Length: 313
Ligand SMILES: [Ca+2]
Ligand SMILES: [Ca+2]
Ligand SMILES: [Ca+2]
Image (cartoon, rainbow, N blue to C red; front, top):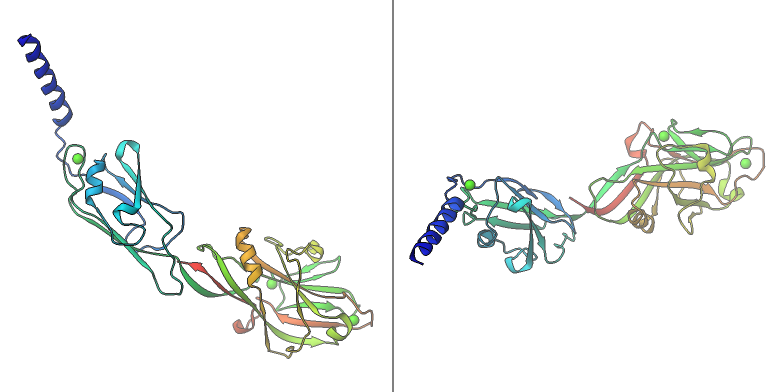
């Protein structure tokens, strides 16, 4: 019995030495962390992630983790281990608030040297990370020159002129104008938008002969094509303009907030609009049209602008 006990003790000692006596004296290292220190634009639904040089002890991670930021306090987080303890993902209990204005909203956490590997070696240096969530920003997007222009009914799309027209031509051929903006890549929600176009000139009496100008939201994609003339609008009802502000070099503005919010929901990469009159032509044998400057205009101030308010970094 004594002999068996002795063997058992020896076996346990062997196993313990085998487990701990691997000779690991190297401290664990943090290979990567998201978000990194100084990061801007942490989004709802994102998690904080760490990758270590070797498996770390989970209890020691909780001892080493410190934060006083709302949503990141130790009792507010949950953890998931992966890759045998080499990776830890940290989930906030609720989405971290965004800044309601253009100022940054800061969050932070620290991993102290309490963190240990499985052999008990401590992290050599603490990690301190400060980052910000998304904030409400307003940007002036300039139209996409390659995509804006005029489509002549049943004929060609013209995208390389300094102007874009809506109305009818000298032959009373219907003309429709198109403007396009690239949606900002780093965003988490479009909140409001104002489209600004600058009048180049007016020929004839477009409103008198053709009715109101109709501004429509649509998605004509990565090229302006003749078929875009009749592309179904995405907007249920157009924005109407009776032409009161149409003098040369005068900017006109349209509130397109509902459409940019819908474009965000639809995951659209362009914010695109069409200009057409209620009636395509009055058949009076002369041109009736409003000419707006396009994004090809040499004068930067005259190009189509979309003042977009959104959550960005
Ligand atoms: Ca180690
Ligand atoms: Ca163009
Ligand atoms: Ca006409």
